Image (cartoon, rainbow, N blue to C red; front, side):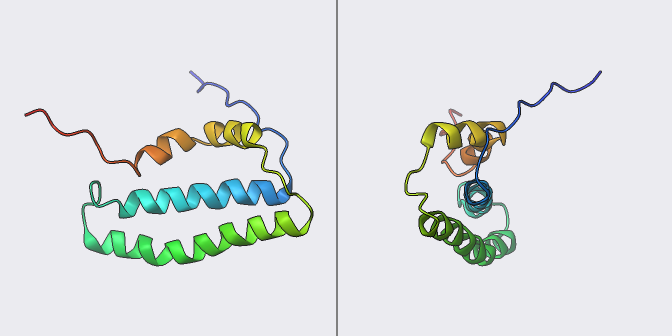
Length: 102
């Protein structure tokens, strides 16, 4: 049985695609750093170290967009791309899990 087809990404400029990719990489790293979900300090430390580089890539993508005159962020289009790329699932790791009821 084949997995379900993933819908195509919306049309994005190269800078928008880099913006979305860098944003998701930052979210993934924050999820690894999250004290309520981390299991080892070393993994959280490595993620925190990598966060600096990915934050710079995110800044660079936004700078490029601004420099090229892309002054608006098309939130609906970018949100669709984030959903297709698993953004909701990935961002969930940044949140604090619900308190256990035991």
